[in-house]
Each structure stands twice: as C-alpha cells, then as structure tokens.
Length: 158
Image (tube, rainbow, N blue to C red; front, side, top):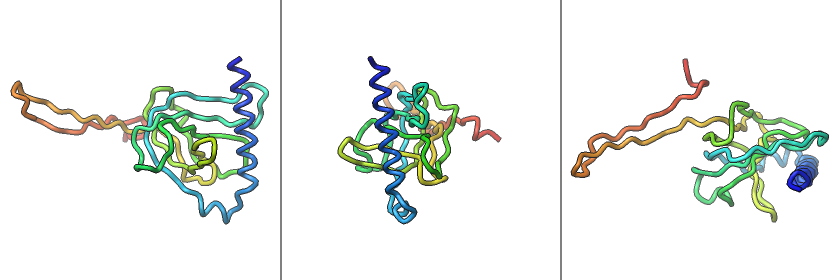
C-alpha cells in the first residue's frame, strides 16, 4: 500500500514540477525566492522503478534557518528530476541522519512549502560542517572553557 502511495506522490510531484518548469521563463527565474538553511536529512524518496523522470526528494528536518523564511520544520528538497535545468549540485555522500546545508529555490503553495535545486547551478544540497559547543564547568558551576569544535568533512581536508 505504501509503495502505491509513494508512486502516486512521485507522479504528482513530477507533473507539478513539469508544469512549474513550463510556466517559469528566464524572466520569472529572477523573481525566485531563495532560502539557505541547515538541517538533518530524515528520509530519501527515490523514484520507483518504471517511473522515469520522477523526482528524487530528501525530507530535511530544519535546525537553523532565517526566522520566518520557511513554513515548516520538515522541508522536502527536490534534488533531481527529469525537467530542464540548470540544476544545483548534490552531495551523493549524504545519508539519513547527516547534517546538511541546503540552498535552493523556495516554493510555497496551498499544499505547503518545498525547496528545489532547479533553476541555478549555484544551488546545493551538501554535508554540513558540524559545530559543537564544548563547555567545561567546575564543581561550583563556573565556566572554565568555552570553545567551538568544528568537525571537517572529507571535502574540507587539505
């Protein structure tokens, strides 16, 4: 049953994406609202076999975004689809549970809001540098040290 629902959802998104692509001329692309946020990759929706052209979508739980910029705590990010480009870049190393950075075109309609990487080669969906604040306290509760530790991804290594 779930497979059928996913297929219907994928077909809907494909048709909506194709309609959006047809409506958006180069002039319209300049008016696109872009968003940048960080979050946790929750689930990957890949097209079922036989659904050529259906979108590939990551569900992302938003952890940090400009206030009021996004309508939901979980955003579907369309990272690939068989519609005209240009398309942004996707880090193929992202897995469920990873922290990600997203920059793309924000679309809000009656069904909610989504982000797509379609429309600019500058858009991206990639692993995020994780920042963790480390605070040490004495037995009295006084802060001894306050530093930020940044975990580097493979792309950041020199």
